[in-house]
Structure formats: structure tokens, C-alpha cells
Amino acid sequence: MVRGLYTAASGALVAQSMVDNVANNLANVNTTGFKQTLLQIESAPTLDIYRIQTDPGKVAGKALPGVPTAQYVGRLGTGSWIYDTPTSYRQGALQSTGNPLDLAISGTQNAFFAVATPNGVRYTRNGEFVKDAQGVLRTQDGNAVLSTQGQPITLQDQGDVQIATDGTVSQNGQRVAQLEITAFGSLANLRPEGANNYAVTGNAAPGPALGASVQQGYLEKSNANVIRSMVDLITAERWFDANEKSVKTQDDATQQAIMQVAKSQ
Image (tube, rainbow, N blue to C red; front, side):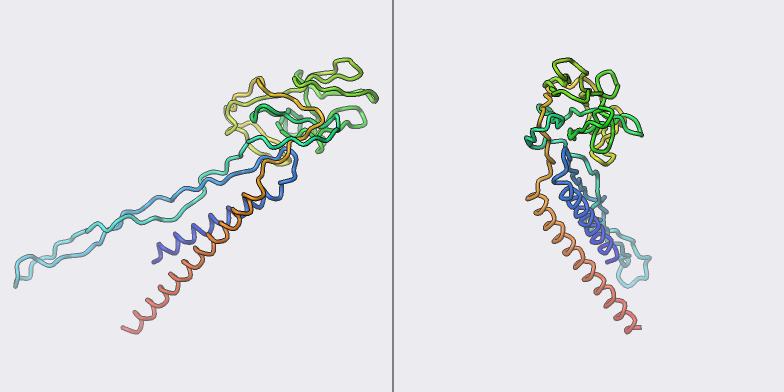
């Protein structure tokens, strides 16, 4: 029965983690360029259960030593746990804003804008950019947007800004710079850092963003699905309740067994 308590408790903990994960996705459903996280759950290792006993000697009427036996009963599950929380990089819908500094990447889900942060170069799908007092193109958090030369992009005070699908930035008909658009062969080696920024870990295989198209005047919406998230919340709640009832039932059974054993002595 003690094993059953731990098994049910592990299921409740997984359900709680599922609620936390879905809640984070829902909280960012209106965050530009947000990529939802998923929850990968796997079964904990199973145990082989044997019935251990000592059988009496085979010769009747004689006090022979008992024969130990271990009869196989079956396999016992030990619950579940979180295997991983990968990010879904599926492209979100594009929303027209008409703002010339709003940019979105379409055509591929593995391409990102490069920005300079206090912790080094990071990557983002959030193209909601602004121009500061010095004309530097920045993110909403104040990080400078980088060009293919690895330098911040600086615009003039006046003049229309045109950004081509290949990321070329022009102002008043003059070429200013080209946006650094980086694609990664292994998205599993990107680590979310918050504020829609991703850091490179391991061999992410950065390279040219073939097939990527920069859309001026558009923003990429969050790829979190509200309806699916609400269904997942209901599922997690029922899952937690079922495991909670299982814990209570086994706890009551254990209490009854202890009381009966105590009375029989």
C-alpha cells in the first residue's frame, strides 16, 4: 500500500506541473512571438512483484526444512514523471499592424532575429521594434537589433523606412543595413531565457535562414492555442483529483490495517 501512495502522489505532482505549464502558455497568449512549451510525460520504471514464502517439506509426517519459493505475480507501475518540457516552434499567425518597424518572419519556424543583450547575442521571433532617441533599432526591452555585420542598426531621424523580404533596411531610398536572420538546424539546443529571447546551447547548427521572408508591418502572434489549453487544464484538474482520491483511499486502508493489527495483539 505504501508503494501505491507514492505512485498516486507522483501522478498528482505531474498533474500540478501540467497546470503550471498550461497557465504559462495562457498567460502569454497575447505575447508577440511567444512559443508555447509542451509537457512530455513518461512512466516511471516498473517493478517485478514476487510472492515470497516458505513451503513445507514434501514428506508427510516429517519435520523437513521448508523450501523457499518466489512465485511471480506481475509488474507494478511506480507512477509517472516529467521527461522534458520542449518548446513548440510552430509559426504563429501574422497580424497586420501597419507600423513600418513591426516585423515578422514567415516561411520557416527555425529563423530568428538577432539582438544584443547584456548577456550576449540572443535570438527572438518578436519583431515589435522601436527606434530610440539616437535612432538605434531596439526591442521593447531595449536590446539593439543586429545587422549581418554584427552591429546595431541605426536609422535617421526622418524618412520612410523600407524593409525588404530579405531583411535589407533602407531609408529614403538608401540602403542602411541588413537584418541578421539566423536559422538553426537543431532547435532543441535553444534555451528560453524569458522576454521571448533564446540562447544557444550545444550544437544548434546556426546558419543562413533559407526560405525565411521578413514581412514589414506585421507581427507574429503567439502560437498558444487557447481552446486546447483550456481542455488541458480540465484534464489536469481531473487527473489531480483522481490521484488525490487514490492517496486518500490508500491512506484510509493503511490506517484501518494498523488499527486491526493493534487490536489483534
